[in-house]
Each structure stands twice: as structure tokens, then as C-alpha cells.
Image (cartoon, rainbow, N blue to C red; front, side, top):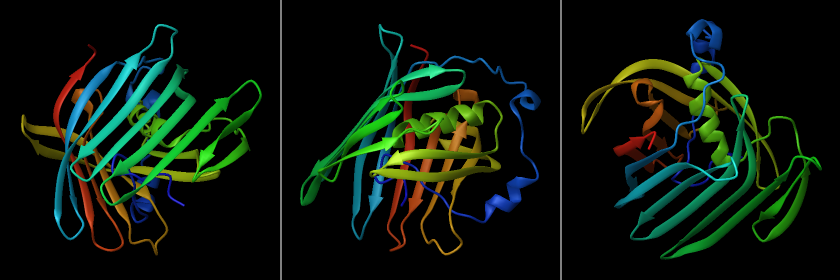
Length: 248
């Protein structure tokens, strides 16, 4: 099962795993600060979906510090047929996302409403939540992530110089193992001109017909600049950055 289920989320395939295996970059090699702090930001994307008809909308993502030292990471997608609200309260410790409370809600026109919740109790070593109206409890593994915190961890690990990553993700009453690789450096045309990016993908089985590509901009604190996802039926989804504010 894929950890990413919504248009606000990422997804990729296999071929590049062999390509990148010989050129892993460690944080020390990259010169990145191993104790780098998170920067708050607010970004807006144009969102387009092609499922036989073109559907356009917007997606907003924010990362905000809270008074108690935790962070709120949130994504909201809005189009005329669907609305997605996804949020995570997290701690940031030693370059790692420590998820605390994850919430997901999908609703829309001619779309079956969907909700998911995960609460992480690190002291008790358990994750509890609800998926498809069924409650669950899982034993927590060290470094376990949720579907949204995974995306933040991925961008921060690329920022630190990592070029292939594997994560364990709590999703749908079980764990997924998700692998990613940076496969290229590529200039990308945006509304603000050409931007240098690192192109990444999610590693899948050879038989998978689903593909997701992601472009991160080093000069913009490794923000996600573009995401393109193609489904097995040929339908596609794309996010493109339209506005960003970092460090506010």
C-alpha cells in the first residue's frame, strides 16, 4: 500500500534506485549543518488534475512554530469538486520529525468523505488512531513517521545532503516502507524565472505503473517547487509553486 493517498501528497518508481546507489552523499560531505533548525514558511501551489476532464485548484502548505515548542505542519487543497485538509503536530529533534498528532479529511462533490487520525504516544511506545472508521493500535518503531511528516522529513534529509532515503510510515492501520532517491539536478522554469532544483522520485516495484516526480529548490530552503504524479490509468496530478514566504 502506498503511504500517499491524496493529491496533496507525493509518490514514485524503481529505475533510479540503481542509478543513485553509487553516488550517495552524506551530510558531512555536503557541508550541511547537521543541527540545522526548521524555518517556518507558507507556500501556495496551483494544482491541476486530469481525470478525463481538467480540474484546477489551489494548495496551501504552512509550517508554523507553536508556543509549546512543537510545530504545526498543514496542507489544504481546494478545488470545485474536492477539499482536503491535512495536518500534523510534531517535534523537531536531532534533524528528525517526531510526529505527535496527524489528521486527514477529504470531502467533496460526488466524492466519498474520508477521515484518518493517528496519535503517537512515544512514552507508551504505541500509535493509536482511526482508518476507514476502524480503530487501531500499533507498536511504535524507532523513527516511525506519518504520511505528512514523511514529506517534511524527505525535504530536510535532501537539504542535509542525503540522496537515497528509506522510511517507515504508519498509515492505514499498518506500516509502509517508502524509499526515495534524488536522481538529477535540473533547472526548472517558474513564474519567477529559472530555478535550480534537485529532482527526486519514489522508488517502486518494477511492475508498478504509478509514478511521482518531485523537484526541490536548494536556493529556496529546499521547498517543493513542483510535483507530478501519474496514475496507472493514465490520469495525472500536478502541483506548481506560485508563491512562497520562508522564515516569516
